Length: 153
Image 1 (spheres, rainbow, N blue to C red):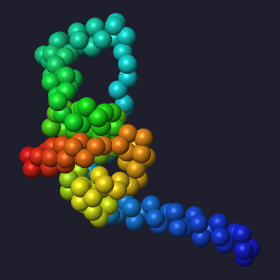
Image 2 (image 1 turned 90 degrees about the vertical axis):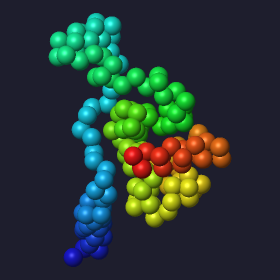
Image 3 (image 1 turned 45 degrees about the vertical axis):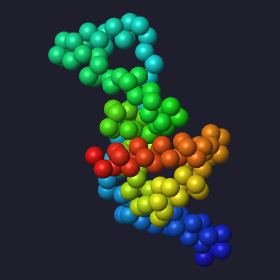
């Protein structure tokens, strides 16, 4: 066999095996969402959605949680909810990041370190996020406190 062909075959097999192993050891607590990311709506679309919700016996408040009630929440203040869901406050995120309600234990399972250690030395996507928007020590303490509280609910 050609040496280049063997290397390509080795690379493809490695990627497939790596993908399969990641599926096997994926955390069972995290469930991927199939909801599409939120889209901006025009006034007419908004009014139509309100009418539909009222006909279905719902108000807009029950269909879309009011995050304005949670402006004192560090996860809302720092914009974590743009990507992460935070189920205890009804934040949906955009479906690309795990629910922070399970993060206290999930970080240990994913990265082999505590949330405290992870916030000091983030990995993956969060290393890039914290590189451009770092948390102060006080903010880290608030994040740890609230995420731990959510995990105990």
